[in-house]
Amino acid sequence: MQTTIYYAQDDAYLMEQVDQKGRRERKSRSAVILSILEEHFERNKRLGEILLDLGAVTHADLAKGLTLQENKFTGKLLGDILLEESLTSSDAIERALIIQGRNIGST
Image 1 (tube, rainbow, N blue to C red):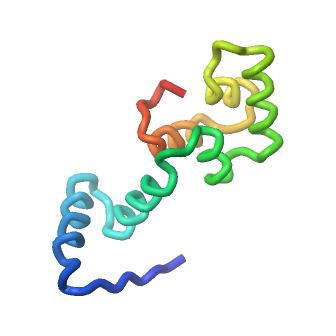
Image 2: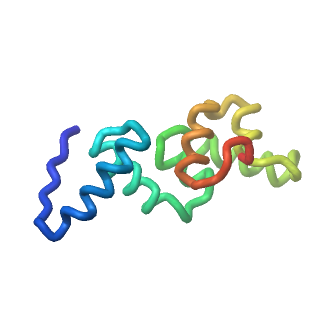
């Protein structure tokens, strides 16, 4: 997918901020903009919602994980349950946690 972004001279400051962030994180301008958008739209969502948005779990798999968490593994984190039940990958959990803005390891 290709996206073109048009901006005015008034936006030059923001684009410079994007470019600086890109240099610090060794990312392209478009990767930085997409990560900012992703963070904005996903930041207040729960882990399961983000995994759904990423296509990393199905509604049925998420429902199974939540049911197991409620009935069988009451003290366990959802991400750990989804991994143990092979309902998603550790990469997907890690990405969802990064999007959510939480530390890796606290699924």
